[in-house]
Length: 561
Image (cartoon, rainbow, N blue to C red):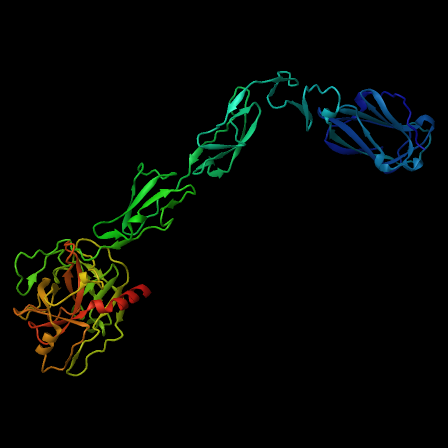
């Protein structure tokens, strides 16, 4: 059985092995073999301030003797003996896990000695050491007047709210200091109070529409503490307004800043404007947007949906002014008929009704494989200032049947041409309006309209200049009587027009628009009432496809394609 004896044995420090690592192990000479007789070893184990040394001995086999005089293992701390051991752990039947020893401060000396005179059969010991943090707050004499907080390798004294630590870092004194209930402009505090006492801590967030930015990222909040001088220990943060970035662009429109130019932060206001006078907003209520708290541009009515700029129809940049009666054909000027489309092959015409659709007669395009077209011109020989149109698909009205034999049957003579891409509108190129089913767009007998084209003139020549004529609508039954003797089909899908002076459309004008001015308000706005379709003889009366009868088909075709 082993026996601890309080006997001080001093070893010279110069012979000791110094162990300073946070943890490690050491053992008797030759362990796990037999240790030699007349051997000795000393280990000095030191720890940083705020730590003590712990020794654990999992294996122990040293010759037992009275008072451990022959061989022993001894622990010294601060010059005092903690234990002197010999024998085997098995001799006392104790729990090996209890064989732990602690220094009283930050150093421990361990000595081993074998003083026998014969070779022993004992294998010595194995010891494990480590540094252990001391909880100074559990010890008397820490000196804190109020609160003590243990830290790794030391401790700190703390004070309650409304107290501050003194210069000795131990004592607390009362502080009559208050901080305001505002840390930063546009910030919110949690909890919220009229004022805060010294050492109070609060969470700081920003008001709606503002954010805390750290470098290139946004942080949700931060914490501050009321200081002794009545100020907050505020980090270098600020609540800055959210930035919606530059507003998205819209087709054929632009952005105008109502508030400060190019400022895109919270509550900034912009207005979308279309490229007038050729485009207009679908709805006036959707033009103003505000930078919202979630950093998006929003409209009160439409949310984030952007407005659309739609083509302005029926308003020529250079409208025709009738100061006298127009007899037969007259030469058109630039901007008189900006919707006019020249179909070069086969020879014919069409009318732009949007920035991507051309309205024409079915008989013009029914058998066309390619369809070269020009727009924005008034002279068919001078195309350099015009716009080349490329067709994507042709849509013939399903009710149209190509006339066969000697008869004339041009019922449902209407077609649509979809362009590959939208055209850019301007003074020489803009669409004509479609009619509506209301009295404003009615085309009664005697109502005068305009027809334009590069068709054959009264001189039986093809002009280079775009020509136009002023034609009154005639009674359909009266026109029917003028076609007696001819195999013709006249239906309610047609308009008849012409005058007794020979003004008329002719070959080459087919597919062009027969347009009328809206009576009220008088703003020189035109709609297409008819499409040049057919006639018995040029210079008499002509027949035009009645567009209002095909509004459903036109709308459905354009929506679905």
